[in-house]
Image 1 (tube, rainbow, N blue to C red):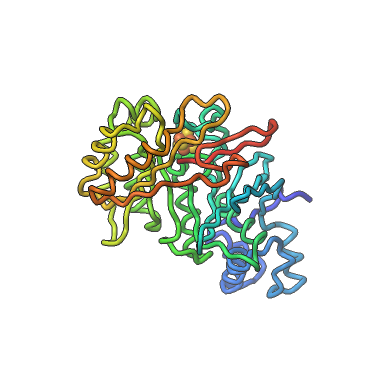
Image 2 (spheres, helix red, strand yellow):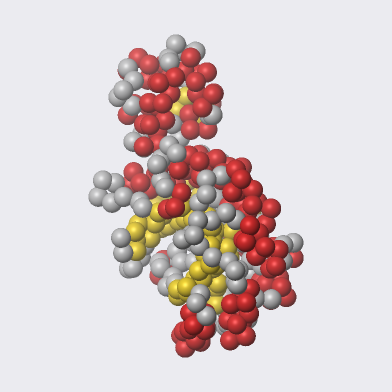
Length: 352
Ligand code: SF4
């Protein structure tokens, strides 16, 4: 019997699980055990749940299963980055990227298959949009990769910066965030959600979801320039976006990360750097400058190192914490904004 005609235990609510278990005269603590095994012990099948009797595992297995993502392939980059090509139940494929950095081991996960935001510097836009991921498919990326690397290594951070715009898949992403922070025990301070700026959902996220870190893909300092590279700006302009950032509840030490992809001759002038400082006034901000990763046929160029450093220096001199992000995994096209069809079913992107 295939999994498709069975209940996927990871997609059921707590109440649905309790009702299902009650139908086998199983008390609520058995559901807690199931949740513990699925998310903390990362069980890939009911057979692994040795706390359940063999008879119950068989009975439950006749109507339900534990979902998994299939690892189609992995590719290692010389800088330690690993790209996982993962297959969903319906055959669609997504990618997650494992990024080691000093003490941290970060997993960059996808929230949609494709994306409909159409940012000009991001090749996902040309692939189009297939569908949003379900909450368990978002969480399963973390479980699948964790199973693969444990016990030698442990994930420390999760970033929603892979394929897709997380806030364009709001309900499922919020469900997944709760799952990650409660049942999987990942601290909300170790999770970052990156958005191109769907303003109403940014505020809603902090009303309905755990208070994870926010990264905003800004990339320009005037509406004209931002709209020319990010169509979402026609709907929510820079001032509206920054107003929302000012309303987000934050602890004194917390900061919103502003991602700024430097495109030569488009947004990398000293006037841009000055305007960026004015725009960020009064926001607990830090800035990640990401020199554009050129690829064959790319419509933009990477600025030279000198202008990247001058841009950073101007921001730093005005007390804005600014990092230059090296794009890791460039040799396997796992770096920010790089997406590739390696064959008709293999695609990758990283959301800025
Ligand atoms: S940068 Fe992010 S929001 Fe923009 S098209 Fe790419 S994946 Fe979508």
